[in-house]
Image 1 (cartoon, one colour):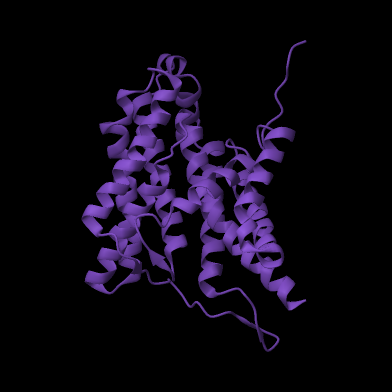
Image 2: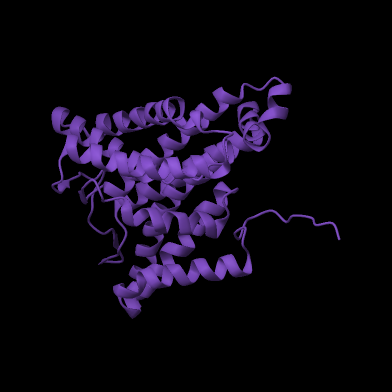
Length: 292
């Protein structure tokens, strides 16, 4: 019974990590209609910036703030400096460009920060919480991860549903020409979307790195699982990204705990294939009317 509970709790925290990365993908998709394959290395770079600040000051929270601020700036710079030059010149151009950025950021981080594994501190304790005299597989750092992801999800829902800025971002993404005629500054909204998505991705990188080792490739395994979580919930829905991440994390935790960790990648692929076959838009995709 204790193994069942610990496996479920481990999956819950792991699912929240996937959800954090999926939220960044959902944000940039809803605001720019681009699937950003460079999200993971962008988060990796800001995590190394945080680690440099922590090493210099000894303060985890100064590093945390530096990572979020640098993420916001990095997203805006990449959009203004690179991405905006290919927007409107073919749907695949921006996607291929993000793949190129994936490689460039990897190589740049290896040159600047080095290729060795480095320890990244956790924001809180990494020992299991005591419940009824027994330790369970849930730490205070894990609780921080759960709380942070839920707060980000709530803020994104408020942004897109209840604010003028969110409405302008969605209008700029869905139909830029009409949005311009209505007075929306499309370029500014696109830059804002990239900056906010990069900020959320930076948070995901920090949550994943806490209490473990970081390396220029440490986010690579999260890329695939984060995309699966985003597709599972639906790229249009922040709540769907969180639910998708949770379902994926718990499912993979049980596969790893009871069937073997070597089957985790295969299980993720099976889940993705089933969702795409049964509900291609994701579990939380809105129903689309079709004229017959």
